[in-house]
Length: 261
Image (cartoon, rainbow, N blue to C red; front, side, top):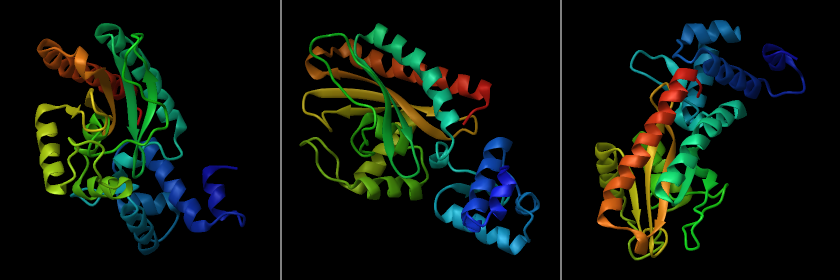
């Protein structure tokens, strides 16, 4: 069955099939499309197409720019598109392993899904005492360095949604729970290009993460180094942020070259 055939199948919801069709079309085009182009692709009138696009926009799957053209939203990049996630993981694997080798500490890759942030891959340190993580873990966008490195770069609506879905609560005495303070920290993160977790999720732990960009310049993932606080030195506190930023930039550049996500 072709993509367009699915829309006319009696066994499928027409609206759902049309929505999936346009999301898949946006992924393949890798550029914004107009209402007219969407209507022509779906073979619908403009009013019906506009209602569909507005629904997808309200659900956070697509965004509309100043020219009223539509693009995939940052949080929707993995939805139904496993091949994109596979490409990201393959590219990031080399950087995570190299980062682990250089730092001697655990490195992690996390991704933005529709309304939450999840750990995708973990490369644990070989040291006896180390920070650990696990694939599939949902990350706090207000405390985890990976969560903050992703959430800080989303628009206010999605950032608020990430906080609402996760909930904001203290994990340690160092956790920020005031929303105004959280958004102030997001602004600092955007300015410096990385996020830190200074015992905000786990007492005695330190983590620094940097954002990974898609070719459309949306932040869709992050990479981090995690280390026990007792092993940190002033020199490492300066070195680790630069290391994760360099790794994240390398991954972003390779994604842009491949034109994935």
